[in-house]
Amino acid sequence: MKTFDNFHVIDHPLIKHKLTLMREHSTGHKIFRELVNEISTLIAFELTRDLSVSTVDIKTPLKETTGSVVSGNEIVIVPILRAGLGMVDGIIRLIPNARVGYVGMERNEETHQPVHYYFKVPSEAERCHFIIVDPMLATGGTAIATTDSLKDYGATDIKFMCLIAAPEGVEAFCTSHPDVEVYAAALDDHLDENKYIIPGLGDAGDRLFGTK
Ligand code: URA
Image (cartoon, rainbow, N blue to C red; front, side, top):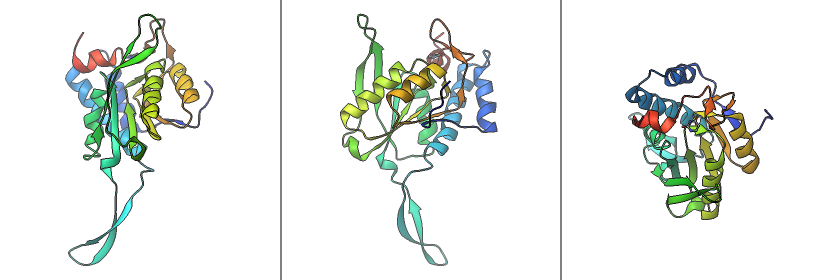
């Protein structure tokens, strides 16, 4: 695969361990859900490394000093329905003041293009740092369309977080949106004829919500 400066795989033993448990077919939805949240927390730690901080004056029990604070209020997590929902709590654990927007995408039967059937995102988009979340970056179609929608809405600062990416999805997304940094826990091998990621973990939504 061509390399892209805006694509990052977070290489960490804890992420690798948790991802291995998630991939295992016999892992049930309770544990799977916990693992999705735990990995999302770990990736969010890296993804937020360049957040800006403001300086505040504080007083410890011993001395006046200065500290740094992040404005969590300006961070908007945008799960792509439905599997993206599984990642939200893990990020909120780290950024409790973050807001949450929702984007629901479906494929138009005639044009085969993804269109959104639901779009609810906080206003003042130009002030916000958006983190789009979806566990699987497969073809990239939904992620690209969601990012297009956010940009049309006025967003200028967008990052994308997934758990597993396919080379096809990385190439499509990073070519369409070179200004959006993409963070993943793993880069897998390829897509099969049904657009599932191989080796992957199956259908992330079904595994999260126990619907199969
Ligand atoms: N969506 C999934 O849930 N799994 C895949 O492998 C690809 C897309």
